[in-house]
Image (cartoon, rainbow, N blue to C red; front, side, top):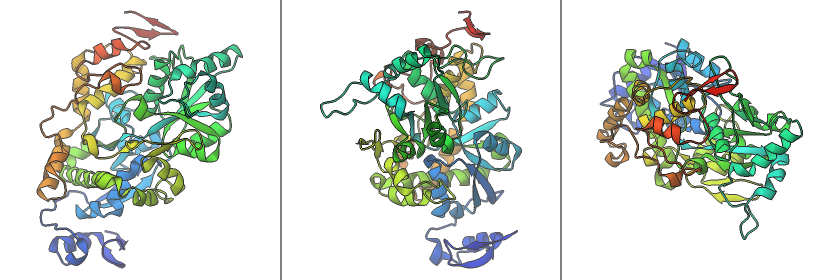
Amino acid sequence: MRDQQVTKRFGTLTISRRTAVAALIAGSVAAYAGSARADMLDVEKDELKFGFIKLTDMAPLAIAYEKGYFEDEGLFVTLEPQANWKVLLDRVITGELDGAHMLAGQPLAATIGFGTKAHIVTPFSMDLNGNGITVSNEVWEMMKPHLEMGADGKPVHPIKASALKPVIDKFKADGKPFNMGMVFPVSTHNYELRYWLASGDIKPGFYSKTDISGQIQADALLSVTPPPQMPSTLEAGTINGYCVGEPWNQQAVFKGIGVPVVTDYEIWKNNPEKVFGMTKEFTEQYPNTTLAVTKALIRAAKWLDENNNANRMEAVEILSRPEYVGADKEVIANSMTGTFEYEKGDKREVPDFNVFYRYFATYPYYSDAVWYLTQMRRWGQIPEYKPDSWYDEVAKSVYQPEIYLKAARMLVEEGKVDEADFPWTSDGYRAPTPASDVIDGIGYDGKQPNAYIDSLPIGLKGKQTVDGNQVVGG
């Protein structure tokens, strides 16, 4: 075992990792530990490396590390930022990373074989909400005549994509493409951006078996841009807008290069966002380690939301460090502390912009997985019709609430979380999302995926497929 410099929990001294675990179990450093470890899991692997992308919703990982929750479980974790989502996923599959902060669509897409084929699972959902859609200053000025204004002279929110449609029509009439960035083909951002555009009668394009650009029949051309590069790509004029997580929408405001027009909370209230992903093989080979990791992440999520977000400014300071997000504290605080700034100076209260624990945010609901699968089918990433039972089976092969609840039960018994914090009797499906919680007024029931897909005005329906540049079948 390598030696490591241990500073956070024991003062500054050099001890081996194995010795540290033994010391904790023995209670010889109880004065520093701050919590009992008598029932610590016998983890099969204690040295772990986890990946993340520089976004504020990686916060549960940073907090579990900084607050010693991983150490409490006998885990010695290294957190490592990754260049992009593809590299992150590939390194989890090869075992170079033991797990990672992931786009919710990544474990699902990998498991069904869209892109890289691998069985990835998640025992922990990392957060709700947290994304926004930003347009360039030029586009914003073109949108303004089509906005509804309040008595205070500010735009009425939520801003609908129907205000963007005449702008895109003008671009098209001038022979110019309208380009928008999203972070990955199976990202929440891709699906949220597509959802918002389609709700305003703007076609975001289809995928097919032979064309995975996602731009077939598109009015707006969506392409991949890594999150930290969004503002500079917008500033360079390569894209006209983007959908991304924080702090990269607020960064555009601070730099004066763009205007966030809508948050994902306004598109779908309390929508699921990132997950913590591991290979199925890892969870089967190291079940106690998986439980221990899940316990630490649950505690971190609780800390982030407890006492009405009282810890958020401390979280902002941690996330601003270069080893995590590396953005200015003021930029991160703009959304992490319950506000969101749209046009410069137009800061509004959005207390649930980032949710890490309340509303059962960390429970891996099957219905969340099914929603992502419906969007993959809607836009042709799943090229052919699947019965409702298929959606349920895939969701249950990837989302692992049984691991989550086992970890939660241990934490309840240890007195670290409350019994009421978890949906013990859930069948894994949320209650249907009411139409009033979605920007286009179309509700969602995860138990009826095909009926939901067919209710959406733009997108594949029934047994339709994309052949060349045409939608065929019925």
